[in-house]
Image 1 (spheres, rainbow, N blue to C red):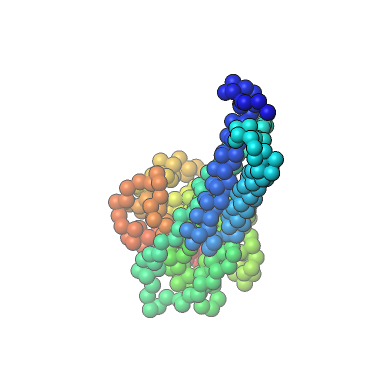
Image 2: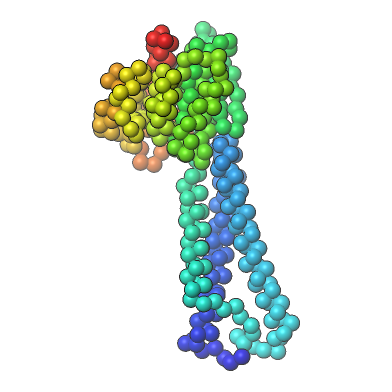
Length: 346
């Protein structure tokens, strides 16, 4: 084997092989480290819908297999050189060579893998940060005792005895479903069954019909409302529009994607924050023609987007002009009054 000069095709393809090997190590490590970081470092991942842990586990397994392949191939090449070329200088030993097409295809695969890692990192959910202020403030000796049960896809807050009506709630995008149990607990205290959905990958639009399963599990309840926060409200609106038996729609800092102006029999309450930097007051005002003319609008003065749950601050949100506790007390109280009106109307 002749000495490879920098301008030799052999030298060029050897460099291409090294580029693929090192970029492969980076991509494989990213596929391992990021999913494991999410699985082990965020309780909302394992506590949420099983789709995300399954996806993360599959990505990490792919990363381990990829790394094993890289290490094995390198070890085999070293073994070959040791057994057959120990008397040659290192630059003259057998090397792995790739064509230009192989290089482009390999780099494209690594870019796709890193894009997948970036998408997985983006799906990392906002974690529940316990507050409980709304539930404590509205709790009193006269409220109904409640129980909380949780399974793979729902969190259920149930009053003692027969529920007066039910609410199925869709979380906001990438928000831990547990972040809504405190602000919605006053509804259970008031005698209503509340089912908070754990949505696939934290994106409710991936399964907007998920409320159907919760409703079907409770045939004893005849009056139902659906609700949601932010993107969850979009899914709740779509479900209410497609299921006329739903009597009410409760929107937390949200509005529908399609017009529901003709849904005259649907009771709607829209609660928003005046300082919301995501679902801004202008967006709420512009969406009013999309809801029935009988819809009721309530504004929490000084409230922001992240006050509609307990998950900390949210990027892009506005500056609050009120405390989280005060805002959530208003949100919870308005929600209870909405369900009360729904039962009386029914």
